Length: 476
Image (cartoon, rainbow, N blue to C red; front, side):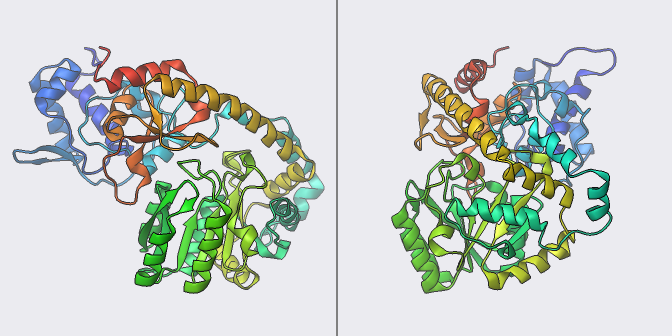
């Protein structure tokens, strides 16, 4: 709540809270601020205080007034988020009750970089830091940073396709998934997202049609739109993409690419069935499009899960994965395995963007793989996640939620029974960053669904707060 202070007036506090949320994109452009009367009631201040705060926001160019309609957030340039800002210190101190104020994809990512509070975050897409703590990673770095090693590779650019030792290790690792790729078919990248971007920039041109699963990760929608692509959303079902919809798209639009998360799909947790996989590959061959298979969650998935790249033998398919989810988000090591005829083109695109990738960390990762450390670490994470998932599911059901998909993997696709865009703003005031269902659709629409992270939703306090705010109680 707003508190009287000698250093800052109520008007200044209220204006600062709105300003922080707008600048960090936790309150998206086009969102409508609450009416003056409603905001005054929610914050326990006078209407004149709210009017003055809104005037401050107008003067800063952060909002605009629409006659007889209210105040709306303007499109403003993104700014760096300082770790000492009010938004980063505690979103619980920010204002409540925003009307139709969707959290966008980049805001969710910013929340990964700068925690909105010290509470476990249900909307995050990664494991908690304490889950990823290891003793073998520092050992791996020490192994490759001796004086002789540093002289050998740190004083010059690395190999264009990435460290050969790592590519050899990745080739063996992929073989265990029945994805057979020679080291020469593998290119390392700055994370899996970078790999997806390289593929898009290599194979597509502005105006091309791209099929993407829906629901799907909002960053992929936003990234493709930024490149000028035309997105064709394909409904994702339990056994795979809606093949009838894909067939109609192929006939009408001649798409150049299909982007898929076959195993532990984000956000539903679905896994592709063999029958659907075969039909997808038949469509690709008949209509001459490539498939990018994002296997980001391979480390927590069964090796025997159906993968398009395994069935296709990397002919029309390109395999993408990384290690941020399971090992070290800040190492930013990803890779792609591609048909031989595409490798040089993909490498050229990589060189134009980054020249090379960090050989030191790539060599350290190769050591982790070759020594079996990564495999044992992943097994520990899977065991811990199974326990967390069971507890989280019980808490969600007890809170009156239902699951729109069978709980599996890292994420749960949950029906909250209320508009989760609006609920997300109320939860944000309590220090919880949600991932509302509208985020996962190419064209945002109100949704009662939300994605939860099973590793970060084991706290009963979160679900108690969720129940209270879903019922419309402020707790003041």
